Image (cartoon, rainbow, N blue to C red):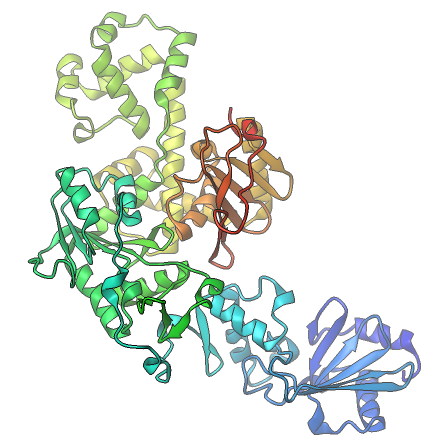
Length: 626
């Protein structure tokens, strides 16, 4: 075989062991007993011929297209999670030449990944190697393999995911020990009070609360770390029961429990980890219903512009900032509080103390608000009804209101679900009788459509709930219990249907087909077969349950999407992009923000086009509207 490339190539092709790449196969020294005799003999004879001693190699690379082999030395193969290459020697078997490379003094040597693929399952460390690989897969380190072959690139990638290496194992940056040497490099005392800013509108977390109807006046609010109190003044002007506390600006506030606690951009200005965790716990202890937490989100390029200090940075004003990634802050909140953290925006999370309130929130989040009024009017125009027309028209305003509530729920409302239920019973005898009269008047088609849409809303809610621990039916909001009774044989069946839907979302072909169907049904948007479907956010409720779950899985990572006009569903790569424009009413609105949510890596990329990048105009806006 020493001089026969054809025999060598054919033998290499038969190998079942080792790490198989497009152009080569790598095997560890421990697998020699599994090699074909010809290859094992070739390795030993070549090593002897070119004086390559046993302690100068432990990995062999077989080329698939060239008559070459490479002897690689990773001296810490078994000890390091991602061992570095010390030296290598390529042998050209055809030309009988050799070339050596030495990386022993390199700051950025090549490194190995997926060590379990180099050895057999009988290797004593095989399971450990698999665990190490699995850790990296979970946080998305292997998404782009062309970027991970060298040590410094690998370490930067790990840090960008919010992790660091501790004795070879991945751990969250939030748990990284403080570098004591950095703790004495600042000039003077940290100026926390300088982080308070003046606002001319509600802060982002308060706007998130308003979107979810938590600032209607029914809930009391404590702004814990209120700064100069701009949010408080705005809420007070709207007659909301609110108090504020700040250690600098409102230190004399008498604290008491409130329905909602806002911890807005506080954690990121506390330089001491212990104090940071205690502040979070204390804020949560004051909440009756929920705690909303917000922090600063930034990428590594932004962070690198500043002087590092402890686990954050020091600004030019001597203020401390701890920047997070979206995944990092979620992990931190859940670890410290032991509760689920629900994303409602970039760096904004809600943690519910009232678990029934939490389920109500999550269910309502998937309850799409549809325009049933216009559909009802179109139905009437097509099929006018005369049955009990006098009864309907005599009470048209009340009954139309009741009918809209029925369509919104997809079922007959309970007494508590319609404000004027007593009047309905008074004029019609019962909800059921009035419902039958309205079916005859408006037609059953639109009601059946509302039933199907509402059932899809519930399936999306239950499917997303599979990521956490499902609550027993006895602990559910009453409205959700009524929904289960109306749309499913039982709770178990509801979960089974949702589970099947959720699993289907992992099939790229199903997502591609769902996008294609949506494009044809809506007759709007842009469909690139096998790649993506872009549509306007207002049509989200018209999509199939599979596609809605796909989008909802992404928005669970990011939060609310109301401010984004366009949604881009990538059909093959497991990604969803959100696109926000400066003024959608313009003929050619400008793209100002893009969010790319990577489901498989549980990671998010943020792109801001209002700075150094020139915003791109949307030239074909008409394609996205019916």
